[in-house]
Amino acid sequence: MKLNAPARLLGLLLSSAITTAGAQSPPADMTRLGAAPSVVVTGAVSQPMTLTLEAVRALPAQTVTLSSTAAGQPVQHSYTGALLSDVLKAAKPTFRPEIKNDALRYALLASGRDGYSALFSWGELDPGFGNRAVLIAYAQDGQPLDAVNGPLRLVVPGDGKAGRYVSTLSRLVLLRVGP
Ligand SMILES: Nc1nc2c(c(=O)[nH]1)N[C@H]1C(S)=C(S)[C@@H](COP(=O)(O)O)O[C@H]1N2
Ligand SMILES: [Mo]
Picture 1 (cartoon, protein in one colour):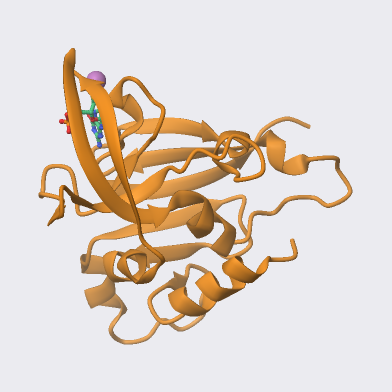
Picture 2: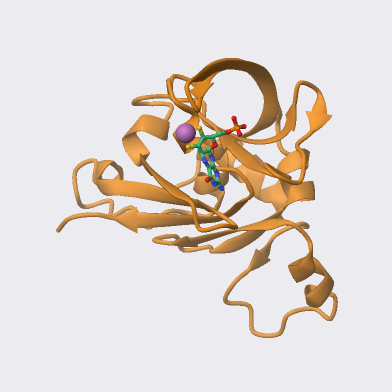
């Protein structure tokens, strides 16, 4: 896939803080990196990566104020984080250029450290289609996310229930569905 300018910029921003999963000889400090809070981005991508909290904080930030329902109760918070679609593009999805709108066959499974998982379609995240500004958030109401929900959590503008606000985000797996 040919990256657009923002995606190339993102790659530059991320390059010091991400590691490529297939690297032959990891640097000696990988054990410390492994112990830090991080999100593995894997699956149908040509550049799997481990995204640290610092790398997410280094990306262009967006703040959104969202209302949702958690366990039947209305909740409203502001969240600050990086755009999920930017992070996914940096991992270079393996879209097949010869197939019409191949990207629209892709889905993303986001999981927390407890195994809790939720699915998104590429089409809903892509700015050219659904344009849902799903964030990988690190702050809520101006404060770092607490240990229960953070340090990284998805927030999903437009969702009524907070079921896809995946807490303790640890894994993003891109899936190509269908023939
Ligand atoms: N990792 C993880 N994230 C999760 C859940 C979970 O069980 N594990 N529950 C979801 C559900 S069903 C809801 S309603 C919200 C609750 O978020 P809150 O505790 O901040 O209100 O978190 C969502 N994110
Ligand atoms: Mo829920």
